[in-house]
Amino acid sequence: MENLDVQLVKVRKEFGSLVAVDDVDMEVPRGSFFSILGPSGGGKSTLLRMISGFEKPDSGNVFIGGELSNDVPPNKRRTNLVFQNLALFPTMNVAQNIAFGLKRRHINKNEIAKKVEHVLGLVDLPGLGSRKVSMLSGGQRQRVALARSLVLDPTVLLLDEPLGALDLKLRENMKLVLKRLQARVGTTFIYVTHDQSEALTMSNMIAVINKGKIEQTSSPLELFYHPQTYFVAKFIGDNNCWGGEVISVDKDTCSVKVGNRTFSVTAGEKIAQGDKVSIFIRPEIIHLVPESDSNGIRGIVKEAVFDGTYTRILLDADLGNFPLEILVKISQSETPSDVKIGDAISVNWNNGAGVAFHGISDNTVLEGVEE
Ligand SMILES: Nc1ncnc2c1ncn2[C@@H]1O[C@H](COP(=O)(O)OP(=O)(O)OP(=O)(O)O)[C@@H](O)[C@H]1O
Ligand SMILES: [Mg+2]
Image (cartoon, rainbow, N blue to C red; front, top):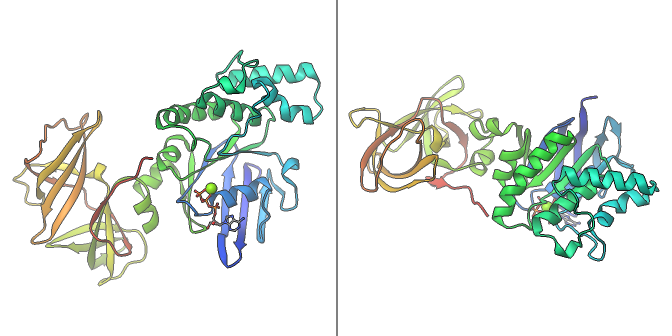
């Protein structure tokens, strides 16, 4: 346990009849960038507030740095929370804002000045201490808010959707700033977001939470290519999701009939012959095959967009009177191709590369929403 900065054991929080956090177990390794990702109302902030001490669990235990901390008040914990609405003090300058928490700890002036300058360097704002807060850009303000927390040298920095108030371009930039900052200072970051691209870009580990329950805790790559639940498969990334019936099962592989075709996919959970399932095929694993390939799925290109890395293709396929729209992403560095709207092409993927879960699907292309 000594390499865990935060450990939650069966932590639960109810508001009236609503279970906001449902017996959550979580282990955050020291020095990691750990994200809690999930839809609005999933219980992310409640979970974070219990780690910071602003909320008390109804049951279960919160360990910080190996110590049982259920009854330790927020200001006595070695955690520090950065909120979404960064409330900087408008009448103070940057340095005064950052020094605020240090002053309350009765640290001497010279020491404070040194620490403030050091942390300003860390967030790439060297020499800006005397600047008025009102004269900062949104991204600079966010970095001051981070500096204000970092200067207190917390064991764990808790960030609740800290980029929510920024516009898209600034957010993209701040993702990299945060990632670099965490790598440089080595402080454990617990980062709450509903934005999968933020979580996938920055994290070592991601816990996906939905309706108060952790669905999966994995590295970003694992989460993307090996979802363990129906919810995660639907929630993360663009995906093809088709409904079908299980024809046969062999260990952890099953054959699923969709239209007039049978696909061999990995069983994501315990699945039996005759079950109705949804299969998920990532657009990145689908490749072009020659039209002569009898195993290929044929279709007409209805949309083709090149984004610099991938050509994103929407294919109108027909699996024997079973119309299917298939999203395909062709990596141009691997297979340069010049696919145009109206072209007839064939596609396929490796057996077992898709995954099946119980759950009804209406045969759809799921597209991650970038806000
Ligand atoms: N103080 C409270 N009193 C009553 N219900 C609450 C309280 N705080 C949170 N809830 C409810 O608990 C559930 C989880 O809320 P929480 O704020 O943790 O979600 P979240 O994942 O942070 O969502 P968002 O992405 O919108 O911030 C929600 O249904 C919310 O309405
Ligand atoms: Mg929240």
